[in-house]
Image (cartoon, rainbow, N blue to C red; front, side):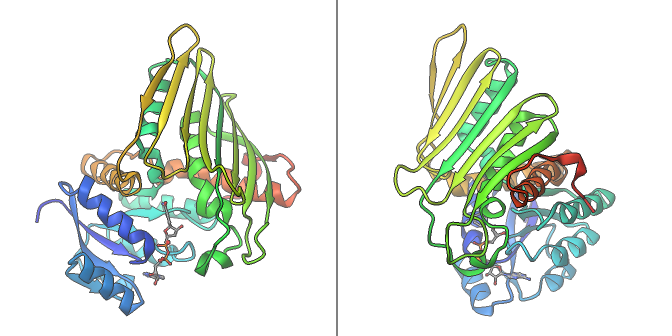
Length: 341
Ligand SMILES: NC(=O)c1ccc[n+]([C@@H]2O[C@H](COP(=O)([O-])OP(=O)(O)OC[C@H]3O[C@@H](n4cnc5c(N)ncnc54)[C@H](O)[C@@H]3O)[C@@H](O)[C@H]2O)c1
């Protein structure tokens, strides 16, 4: 075969979306040749379903096998170090599911090791690659709304059924879900975060972590980001991303983060309203494929991908600062004062 040989570590739920996207969007650059899962039944079921030849129950065996150039790490958040460090040592590039690490300090150690070894390390924030997000990035880069001042990203859903490892996560709502929104806000702000204030609630008695977050983040260039993510919105689901710049505004409205139907409205202060249909079939797997495609292109060209581990450290800074702020009842936390070691 030509191209990169990809190994999937963690063949559970999300691995199905990944492989579908890789095959439809990144098949010319790489192919999944190996799967790894300690659960033999899950491993064989997944590899049979997708005709994957090489199968491992231990990630260290996949890494040592010489059969893969890239690992897609799709395990629960507690499984990171034991795969990332040995893979980096073997010169294997990595796409790591969010959250990148359980804490900022974890993430810093991964990035430092990857940079030293010269491997590409990216974090799977696939929602940075949806059609609406790409149109928003273009609109900002072209100067159509001027300098970005305010980014409001809200997600309101009814997600009260939480099962398995997620129900035991101490860091739940942000780490497992709205970290995607935070990552988008930080990319669109285009500047390092300076301070965060957050309020959280744990409204689901069946789980250990938070299920509601409202957050405010300030960036060095003066941009302010706000986010509300509520898992307890009984009706009227909504995912909204609004940006106000010095010369105009834009608004992306969807029923949910992963909805295929999407409309983006852009209105410069001195121009006509433009309404773009950003709908996309199979948004979820397609975005997964784009995420892998960007990693493979970056590995081929020796460049930093949009969703690099290095960039994600700012996302993890916001996340750690948010949890600390929430512990302190919503007090402002300066990002420079949180520990990264
Ligand atoms: N980007 C997204 O939109 C998105 C969506 C859902 C989940 N996720 C992330 O994907 C990851 C997995 O979530 P999921 O829903 O697929 O969970 P899951 O429980 O369905 O699957 C996880 C799999 O990992 C396996 N596993 C556990 N330890 C392992 C190890 N040491 N080596 C190899 N495999 C191991 C488990 O046996 C299981 O099959 C999490 O980090 C989650 O946050 C991301």
